[in-house]
Length: 463
Image (cartoon, rainbow, N blue to C red; front, side):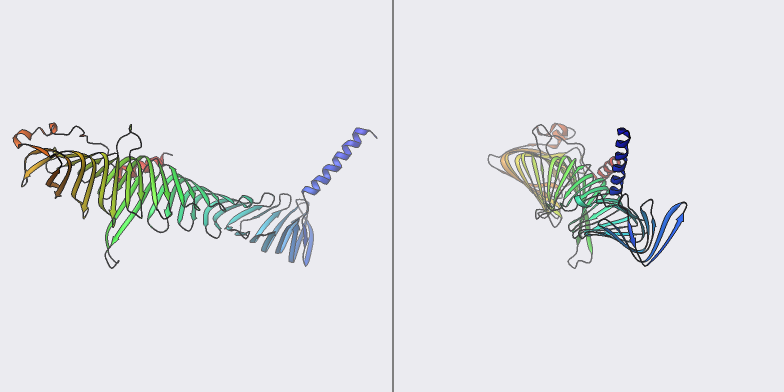
């Protein structure tokens, strides 16, 4: 015989054995067996205590229809598929022996002793240990519940990829997103598209378009279009009547959150803050929730100073620290090149101005009560006789203290080489713009809720 023909025969025989090894046939046992031919295909129907096996995959059910040529089986009634620690249950499904794949669209549950995965429809690939579940999907483990409309679960990697109406609930927070990638054992989650991260113990919600959540570290970062919203509700002593509802809003380019004992949020780059009657814009803000403190910084000398607005007052300095008490502003500290400008509501062309190296502001019932100034203090403040303007006072000292009444200067105390000069009303009237300190500057762009929310939702819509 020709050697080339013999070689081809041997190759063919080897391929046949290889195919048989790769496509291991399904074996079926049961109490009743019926054989028939359907559309030219051999079919076996087995009923009563049915057991199907292929390698280490075992299937039990009430009835099975086996298609011999395709090496497939239709599984009917109380279907249980097992492989080592894996168990899959469904009332009806299919098993594809050549692919080693199980499928059901009648409701399916997977349990591998680590997670429980359920859905209306699902399939499992035994060769790659991958589950592909669709419609009302839920994945649960000892600390997390994940729900979505579509989920891929890679068992050997402890990794899940979910999309469409995704929600993942942990011990301390809940994440909503268009899609997520979740590493179950490492407890790391990446969320994409219309993300919201909610603290389960309060009303703090962190929105964005991309989040990385590290649950073991109790740390999260939103680095795409972040927005923090915290709703505070004040009650009376009996806790049955709401006195006020206040909201903290922070917008920035990047936001980080620590859920440990410090309970702090760090907002970086183009930061905008609104809280009650005050607003701010700055380079960097740190919000310490438990300490009820907001600290804002200027990161570089080349960038603008942090700005804080409170009612008709503007405050600037290299750093501004606001301390709250019972959710209301209690004090503020401005350090390095501090400037305070207060506009009179009745006479909007008139601005009281004070500069110093360090300023302490004290509030009573959320109203500015007194200010303490330290280091090279310069001031200009308008004088009033009852409700009528009565000139302006220019003053300087090493330190100063100003007491306010009804948002107007009531008392001024100068300490250390005090100097002052008075300009009568006839000199001042109509020339208010000439009575400003060298550092005087009104900063435009005071944040408000409408502009922040409008810009935020517009940016989400255009993504």
